[in-house]
Image (cartoon, rainbow, N blue to C red):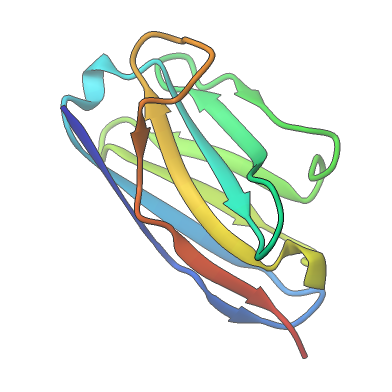
Length: 119
């Protein structure tokens, strides 16, 4: 089993930066991927970036490419989402997710952390 706990959410001004962290407990060595999703109020859940746990290869949608960066530290069993040049439309609850089998769905989800971009 794997547990994920996010931290680092909060209020940030437009144009600012925020870094979210995700602590992985349990059998982190079994992971294939760690990724981040977000869900704004009244909107569908949106994928914002991911990383392959072993080789560190990243993948992200065009909507955030160049602003958001996903990373991981296999020695500390943590993941991170660095968000730069933030916009009000980045306001959402952000979730750390992971899977073991590189399947189409992610089997482990964190509880989410609120990010608000506002002046």
